[in-house]
Length: 314
Image (cartoon, rainbow, N blue to C red; front, side):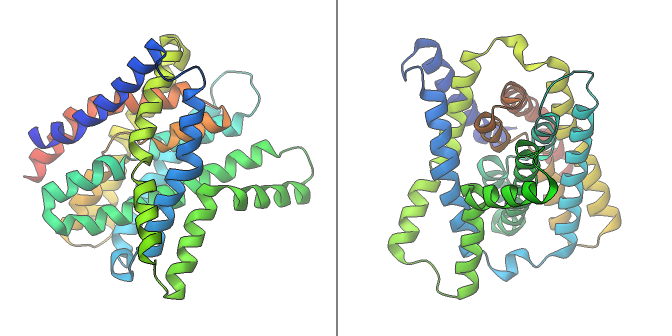
């Protein structure tokens, strides 16, 4: 429990700092959007670029872990998408809303919670699994959600024209362009020069704390009933219960892998909702209330669920 608290309490502190700042009006009326755009357009792309530019073959050459973690993540995304899609609500941009809810259901907080927790539990041997899980979560799942949202945004213009506009929009989106650029740098074998590495490290380090402060700001702006409690409950249940269950079955029964990697897959899949879904929801103005409260509530409840898993792992 102490290990979990040491990781989660600073997260609550940052959300609380944002909430108090929004309540008191310390950062001004436009702070939420400005800070969110800073994260989405500068800080997080820098982090993604550096991650993809520095990833090694040894870190990603684990097909069993990749299949198990990605399978649990995508299955949970699909469930969240379908549950939102079947909501008896007449509204526009149903694909966008369903994509955001599915993203929140399957998006584990691998970077801000997963890395320190896995290193604390497994030692340095726990770092490669959480790095690979982070790449899968941010690059694969995030890219899927962005694609669906852009398809919804550009709908009604003919199939060919829609696909063209979506492709251009994706390439212009820094959350897609940055990891692609990082992959190209990685494949070139040039590596990152020291000034570039220091720049991306400093800028990328601001992504998670600024995103958490933004969540607090947004929570202070919105009414408690604006988030549709049943939708939030679905997302939290899918994230903390469904995803670990599916991942555990795939990791321990279906795909062969070392015991440590199977336990790491289960532990990472049980992490609460990360900040990525809220940032995307706020950027496109779709389901931001659901994403923000799911992040907060799942983080609180993960004190219990993650502690139980740590006890089982021993």
